[in-house]
Amino acid sequence: MEKENKIIFYTKLLSSIENKRDVKIFDNENFEETKKEIEKMRVAGRLASEVLDIVTPFIEPGISTGELNDICHNHMVKKQNSIPATLGYRGYPKSICTSVNQVICHGIPNNKKILKNGDILNIDVTVIKDGWFGDTSRMFFVGTPAPHAQRLVEVTQECLIKGIEAVGPDAYLGDIGSVIQTHAEQNYYSVVREYCGHGIGSNFHEEPQVLHYGIKGTGAQLKEGMTFTIEPMLNAGKSATKLKSDGWTVETKDGRLSAQWEHTIVVTENGSEILTK
Ligand code: MF3
Ligand code: CO
Ligand code: CO
Image 1: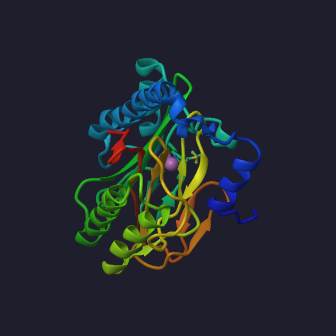
Image 2: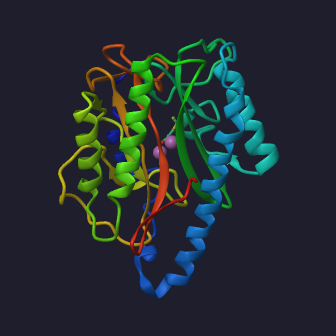
């Protein structure tokens, strides 16, 4: 299988399958329409977050990632009347991603993958509601984590928070990457380079690419109304990744732990708002 990193993957998407976001969101003349779109994203974002809330009590040693998928899928389809965005997305077979321990992202739920005490797990949920997308992921501890695993998970969450705090109408994309990279490396972790955050709206993946490393004051300038994800992936060891032969599962090359947290946000007049609260 040809190795394909997510940046290339998203660039391909932007130029072919998925449409670029309609620029009207940045146009003051359409402010009222923009507000309605943001409200729809708020709804989708809340639903994605709710899926993570409802699956949380089931995350215990002995449950399979396939069962967690089914719980989330049923909640989306039967309770929320929302669409699991990943199901059938470019051939992806499941309704959530479940990434355990050394898996960085895009782990495929499986009834044979039984969680055990001490595992760290990322669940990534994207819902479509009324044509708009909400994308969020959290880390979970299965039973009791080892202190080093807990620390990786906590520092990764701090990176997401710092990245969000760097967002505002005068900020640059590079500001986000810079604060994340700095905090990760101060804690002796590495930042995954090949996979990134992304614009999101009425498409799953849009411009811009939101890198989790970079230099302050560089890259595109943020504007009020822009909607995108921040989803840092930190590795306990080296940043190198490898794609498994299933074509989806991304792991650390050195086999050491990886963690990720994700929110969908909108740039506001004086900062940002988390849409996946
Ligand atoms: N939710 C992931 C993201 O944060 C994308 C998953 S695509 C899948 O962008 F096909 F792997 F599910
Ligand atoms: Co995302
Ligand atoms: Co996601």
